[in-house]
Length: 257
View 1: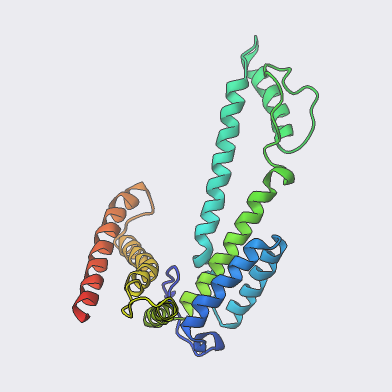
View 2 (view 1 turned 135 degrees about the vertical axis):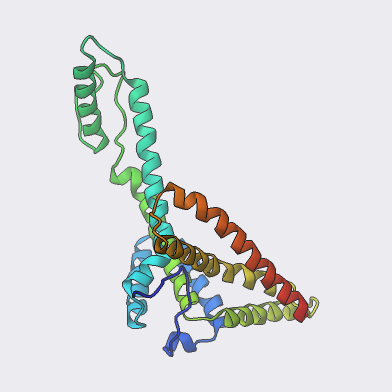
């Protein structure tokens, strides 16, 4: 049976990255991302390759790495879907039905599609349309989006390395040390006020993913199928169980104070 893989789940190990204090990882890795966000996008590609090599050397499977960057992939497909839909809306809004509707639509669509992929067509707009439409997919029009997705991809990889090599307790202690240091510098109250909230927020991400995977696995084990019905049943359950666990965690922390 394959091991369950959850988003940003910790993986036990004794590698060099596991041994680095969580404090340094919390400080250093985000600073690297900020640096690479301000640099030309080609540096993001270098960071993606480097982080992939590091994750592979730590024996993180491709499935585990893919699980942590899936949100960016879904986001990319969502942008693609919205762009295609918007262009088809403009396509049909510009189209005028002629004496031969199907033939006019087919000729117009061919010319329009040719321009959408960066090809020129002098007949475009003469078969029922009202003028040309800018290409839907060209490097000049899409390069900024591609570079942004690459940078977001590298950021998700960095977050994955932090979560997979640091336990929830280590992350909480690391945040606490950073807050204590900042409070000491700025002469604020000694009691940390943000550590618990930030640590719960960070640890809530893998916890929600784990709840969803367990619920989905139970649904499939009972003969259910991946469908709209599954999401209608499991999403309210995810919300209910997640709120319950968050409440228990917050209550446990308040009792220990």
